[in-house]
Amino acid sequence: MTEFIRKIIAHIALVLTFLGIMTVTPYDRPVDPHNGGDPFIAEANGEYYYTFTTGGGIDIRQIKSPESAEVIREKTVIWAGEHGIDYDIWAPEIHKIGDRWYIVSCAKFKEDAVPKGTMPEGKDSDFLTDYYRYSFVLESKSEDIFGEYEFKGILAPDGLNTIDGTYLRKDGKLYFVYSAYMYTGYQNLQICEMENPYTLKTDENGKHNCTVLSKPELYWEKRGWSVNEAPAVLYKDDEIYLLYSASGFSSDNYCLGMLTLKGDDVTDKKSWSKSLTPVLKHEPLREIYSPGHCSFLYCESGEIYMVYHANTTYEFDDSPRLTYVKPVEFRCGKPVF
Image (cartoon, rainbow, N blue to C red; front, side, top):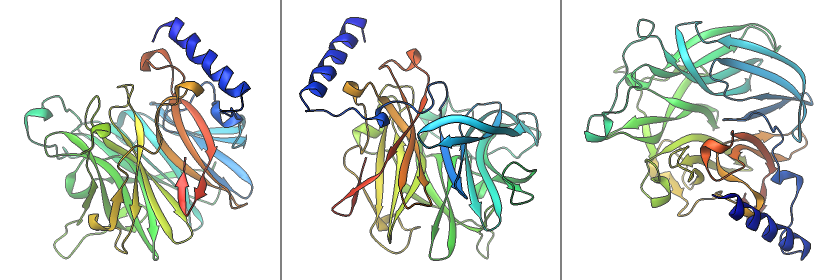
C-alpha cells in the first residue's frame, strides 16, 4: 500500500469521524505499541498479568490495567535451551486452575529431547519441518504467579505435533484445544479431554481419542495458505464460543472465525456451528490490519475483553504485531467484535 493511499484512507477516516458516521475509540489503538504477538492477559485479585510471544522465552508482566501495558513487575519463567527446548517459544497462556498457575505454550524442541512427531503425508507437506514442535505445560510451585515453575512435559496427542493450545472447561471436565497439521499439510483445530492441566486422557487402549472440530474449508480460511489455529474460548452464561485465526498469518489476510457450541458434547464436531464469514478482519479506516490470535480476559467485575494482535499497516513486514484490547459486546445473545 502506497503512502498516498494511506493518506487517503486516513483522510476518509477523519471525515467520517467528524460527521459522526464513524466513532474512533481508545480501543482502536494498541495498548502496547511495542509488543504483542499472540497476547494473553489474565486477572487475579484485581491485578493483571500479561504475556506474549517473544520467541526466546516466556515473560510474565504485571501491568497497570487492560487499557495500559505499563509494567509494574516482570519475570522470565523459562528460556529457550531449558527442558530440551530449542527455539520458537510461541503463544504462551497463563491460567489459574485450583491453587496453581499453569502456563501452556509451544516450542521447537531439540531432536534428542523428544520423540519425532507425526506429520501429514501428501504433496503439500514437503515444506513442513515441524516434527519436533510441541505444546508444553509449566505448573507453578505455589500460588505466586512470579514464583518458581515446574516443567510438566509436552502435550502430543498420539504423537501429533501441536501449537497454540488452550484450555476449555465444561461440566466439570477439562479439555485441550489446539492446532495441528493433518492430511496434506493444512492446520486444523482439534480437541482432547484431559486428566489434569498437563495430562491428556487416554482410553483403555492408550489412545487419546482426539476430535477434529474445524478445518479450513471456506475461502477466507485459505488465503496465503490453509489455516485454522490459535483457538480461544469465550464463555457467556451457558453459551460457549470458540474463536480461531484463519489464513496465513503473514498473508495480509489473517482474520478471526468462530465456532458456536450448539450441542452438549464439545468433542463432537456436529455440536459446533461455524461462522460463514470472519467475525473480525481488516479495518483500514481504523488502521487495523491482519487481526488474529485472540484470547479473552474475564474481569472480576464481570466485563469480558478480547485481547488480540494486529498490524498497523497492510503489508505484514512493515509493522510489528501489536496488542489490542476491546470489550466484548453481546447483541441478541450473540458476541459482537
